Image (tube, rainbow over all chains, first blue to last red; front, side, top):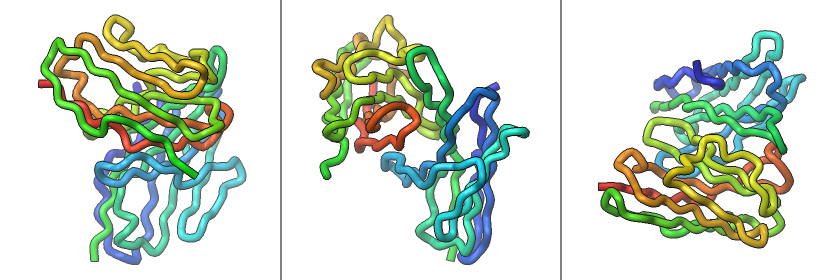
Length: 112
Length: 114
């Protein structure tokens, strides 16, 4: 079993729809969590950090559930420009520092 | 502010040849990462440096891959000899302090091994 798992999708949604992605992690010692966005043939870029209390940035809302060991990303009022792969990222303590583990990503296509 | 620089952007080699990639992180960033991203998969961490010391290289195939970060700034990743399964995008990233910080990625080097 992978340490960080995501539904690969693809999710095909119309403009204006609300879409949600989940990501599960297996190591309970995981400490920090992020969502990154990766456009086709481009490098990943930070979308948002995920805080224990949940956090919102415009149309994007991230939640963390430590008890069930998952994080989620909600996108409201989807735009064509939201089409991308969304990568779940988990950091946990490791000898000498922190280890970063990326999920395989969830692909989103927003259609007109 | 200048981003993470990588070169070359593209490289095509035959199996059993050697190849090297270069990365220049954002100025002042202590931590540097090399990732391998195979098509359709998420980035896989190969090696993580904090300044010029190795924090994690548990997923680096050490029989053929090597990396160094001299003087805690630039880094090179080498593959010798290359195999077909090494075809991937090699991404370099840097962060200000440690693995809990935002990582900033370079554009990557797309390697094709024939």
